[in-house]
Structure formats: structure tokens, C-alpha cells
Length: 470
Image (cartoon, rainbow, N blue to C red; front, side):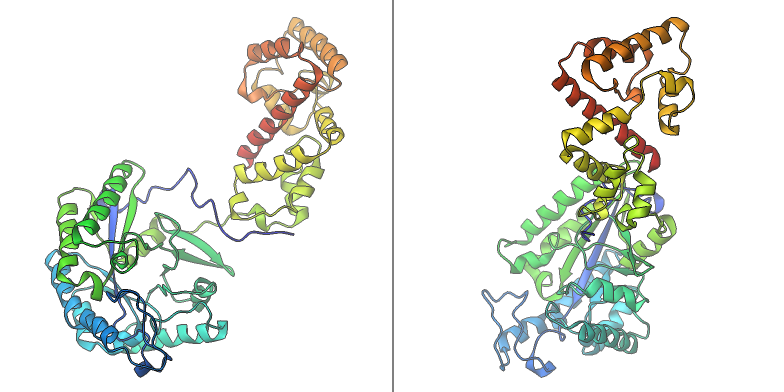
């Protein structure tokens, strides 16, 4: 059984209304990453110096050596950048979420005290600001546990939010398995929070951003001036604010780093953006934990039976009747590469239709012949499937006059004699007169054209039936 674990659907066309407090159209959430003192450094027991996210162009790790310039750039973030940002956000009365590397927090007690006095959330940014992609699972699990322990010791409370950043393919699962986090942010895949199921536990994900993020000052292509950063943030905000009308409130994350945006020329763009959004009504600037609490209350997790996780027997039981009397289609569809994107009407229909389309002509003809005549003998004898009965009744075919019934009987007979299969139409798309008009038009088609049209109608009937099931 092939299964594809990535979720390429998400909320799809039906994203929920975030329903932010006081009817806000957009939640603009600021994250300040505190990594200074937690980066790669041989003083921290690492094998090389840091090379990531600094103003040193083309930086590379120095194996076995201290990189004095790199260390001093990170130190600027702690010594000067943090306090400049602290003044900016407290002055604007905007609380932020700190992504705090546990070892960095332990080396910055004055900054931690200032965060707490400002009422900021201190979420966990892992034990050390290092790469995790090659870290063995057991080692990463232990690092998560130690990050929680040290964070709790340094701040007085355990973290309720988590973001590793330089994560592995195991990170989200391992953090969820730890069991104590209100949210995890190691994804960039949506504009709104959402729930995932990790081994039976509902875990809230609050996606983060790498584009509305000052890290672009340290990457190519990226921002060069504070004005460029402001322009990008403003454009993102304007689009989300326009989208966030009634029933469609949105979320915007802004990622910051003390050693980057804390520089005066860069900070000017951030300050300009804060001033800009404070000129709008309906803007909420929460901490991420506030978003998590709101989402858990307003949009609690909902358990659904997912087609991609069904056994073949259950899948056939659920969808074997979607194509009339042709359970073999569902049997084969279960063996396709299904995933979260198939856990909806469109997804299951696509899987079933793929099997139908790739079947032999004889097999597809068998599906067509499995369909009953419209208003025919089976209907009169009440021997249609429940779905067919409801569909024909919905178009008024269960209440024909004698003359209409005779007309359908005559046309059914002529159609089958010419084409070799019953006349098939998605009756829910038509009324009685429309069905008769299509009947009269299509009966004159050549057999190949009508075979193709009948197959399209079979797929349409299946799609409508799946909408009912979902």
C-alpha cells in the first residue's frame, strides 16, 4: 500500500475564519529569535565556529577555531540589538514571542528578566542554535528534553511553544511526542494554524515564515536597506488585510533576530512598519501563545476518518458503491499513492477516476451497463440502489405521467439498441425537461462519442455522490 505523507491540500478552498478577538482582520505576530550565546562556538563544545545568519559575507565554519568577528556580531545582538528592540516593542505596546535558545537564555539573565517584565512569551528555540538534519533521533530527543529542563530552570516556567529552525525530518514528531507544547512552529506551509495527529495526539501547528523575516538581510537575494524590509512587510500586510474581510481573517508572522534587525539602519524599516499597521483598525498583535490559546478554543481539533488511512476493506465499504455496482474500482484505487490530499471528496474522486480511466474498454463498458435505465423497469420495481433512487427522485423521475414514462421507455430502448449501454446522465445537474432534451440530442451521436460522454457522466455522478459522503 503506497502512502504519501506530505499534506498538499491543507484547508484547500475552505479555509476557516480565524475569528480573531474583537473581529480583527489580521493577526500580526512578531517573533524575536534569541540565539546569541547558543550558536556554534568551540567555547560551547562545538567543533567549529558559526557561519549562519550574520553580516559576514561568505562566512564559513572555522574548524577547531574561534571566529572572533563572528562571535562579536552575535554579541552585538545581545549587548545592543536586543535592547533597541526591547525599547521599540515596549514603546509600541506590542508583546512579542521570543524563540529562545536555552543555552543562550542561560547566558543572558538580564535580557530574560527584561523579556519577562515586558510580558513577552519565551518559547523554546531548542537547546543550541545548531544544525539538526544529521542528528540521530535519540540524540535529538535527548536535546529536546534538555532544552525543556534548562529553559524551565532559567525562566522559572517550562516553554509552551517550540521552534527549532534548523530542524530534522524528525523534529516535529519528536517535539509533539514530548507532549507538553501548546504549539510547534517548524513549518512554513500555511497562513493559518492547523492541527496534526501525532500518534493519536492532536498537536497544534502555528506556521512560521522565512520570507517576512530579517534573515533576508543575511542571504542572497535579500534586503539591503530597512526600506526594502518595510516595503515587503507592508505589501504582505496589505494583501492579508484586504483578504481578511468578513469570515476570512488572516495571520502574518514576522521573524526577527537581535543581531540583524537590531542594527540601526535595519531597525528603521521595522519601526516604519509598526507605525504603519498601528494606523489600521482590526489589527491584533498577539504573542504566539495567545494565538494558540485562541485557536484551541475557537477551532478545536476534529477527528475525521481519513480515506488515506483506511484499510482496503473499509475503503471499499465506504466508496465501493460510488461507481455503480463496481466495487473493483475502489479496490484498485486503495493501492494508489494516497495521502492527506486524498482525504476529501476531490481526492477520493481523483483516485477512483484514475482507476476508471485506466481500465480497459470492456471494464468501463461494464460500469456503464451497471447503470439502470432512467425511469425504467428497475425504478418501477423499486430495485435501484439507494443512491440511484434518490438521484432519480430528485429530478422528478419518480413522478412521471403515463405519457412521460412511455416516452422514456421508448427512448431507453432505442438508445441501448444503438449504443449497447444505457443512457447515463448526472440527473442532479438537470431537471426533467433538461434530461429529456439531452436524451434527444445525444441519441443521435455516434457510438464512440457517446461512449466518451457516458464515461464523463459516470465520473460526474461519482463526484456528486462523494460530496454527499463528505
